[in-house]
Length: 626
Image (cartoon, rainbow, N blue to C red; front, side, top):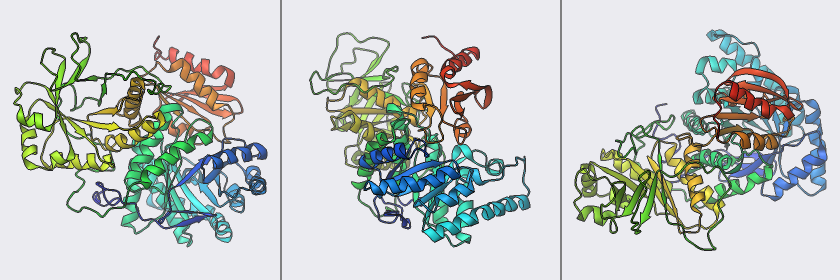
């Protein structure tokens, strides 16, 4: 990609990408309309009563669009019954059919719902081959167009919208041969289908590019936008991170990808996918939408350009100081003092295994500091008595005090400091410093981004810790806000560490959990077992929530492993491509077990599958005793 400066509008202030408006029943997606929040049922689509009850729970939690797994013709026909029962009970929320493998099911479903989601990977040729001539490549696309024509005609007749939903885990063999399992391949897969629909004068399209890898998801959507701008296209975009899992880290993975793109101005509809009841997805999605609502559209500042390629990950070049920066993984700095008050929130539930790399003492002057930890202390209280304690200086202090060249120090800076040439000249000369870039405005993402712009322009390569003090006293609010803003920088390689600070009402364990969870979600530092788990749907024929809890309980100490728990093979084998082990549904109560991409055990009974997975991990030498 060469069009790096204009791929979405502006990197330094919010400006929403202008997309066309697509009507999905009573809901309008794109244009100037608010971001639409949606979810997907995990009930059997043939069970009308259970599905309707779950739909109502989603709607009452704030869902504005509901999707169903439609495996075949029977499920497609039952959408009519679901629709009728919802209307009878006073609900007219637009419905979406999620189609896999069956063009006929898509054509039937399109008569009963407002939108049909199709996966290009499931419409592609079934025959696998190792290369394609130019003629064979074109012929394959022509065959897809023939398959799609009946669906297009039905959608035209019933005013049904179509979502072209590409999953990283189910790209066609032809796309994989030409592009590999890449973000570029995802984009090409979507645009091939866009061209087919346009050739048939059908434009009620929404596009989604999803992956369980947050970096891949972000890069794919940015490439898509750049390609659409280049081709003068403006279709609405649906955002989501697949197979995110459950609990705190499941929420953080979804937030990291979705919020980063929303801050770029990309995204017209979102889903936070969790391996939980679907109504649990709504509070996070609504918080993300509200965060974007508070940002005003701004004009482009043409003086500030993006100096890196936003379509792949490259860490900012920085020197290594105290093992911060350079090729070191990002560090976590936390305030050590805990407020002793009944107002302090109980810690969030999660895997508390990793201790912060640096502890901030503030004005405290402890007589003894354990030698196995590193500390940061306010300069006014620092007396250079401990070799593992370093001063933190504000702007006035680092200008007025001449520290020895070999003295390691943390220098607190703000955006306004980096806009002054004399300050930049001073910072460039300090050899042994770590910058603590503090964001204090209402728009910290853009504040930090501008700060890095000035550091780059001044050729300052000191490592940078991102700092933000939050005025919140609710765990869930901090979870969303901290993950939202820090991820938008870290996913672009900006930041050698993070410091979440609050007013004293959030428990230190929660701050620690969220800090390492942010780094884990961005795949920059793995300190927990990484679970790649789908949110479940009507295709899942075992209790995936229960199995995930069971497997997590037994394996959450295996922090060196990625373990996939997938409901079915539709996207399972692809989305678990980089997992070390896989637990994949293959039938009713039946599981297949994988090491990497290799099938190791087939047709294991669900009740035995978790213990069989543990046996497999032990047999392969990857088990570690607690």
